Image (cartoon, rainbow, N blue to C red; front, side):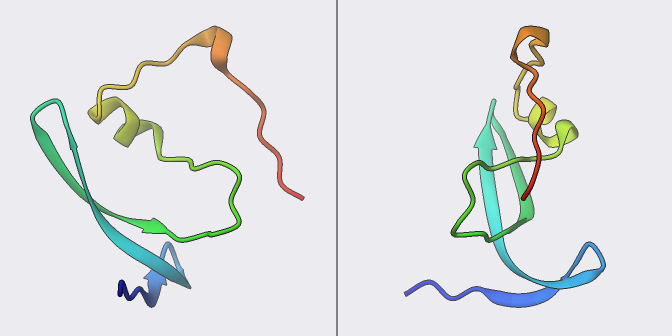
Length: 66
């Protein structure tokens, strides 16, 4: 069974998973918020670039919450 802990993350107490990402021969360790009801997952632009993702102007979308 996987157990996640609440901890201070970006100034508030939140449920966070410590994850390790592997891409382009590099390893990245980071914390990620857990939201089991999320429709999408977002990562910071800087991390996306480090993972090798590229920005595509025709793929930019506006994202809004409830």
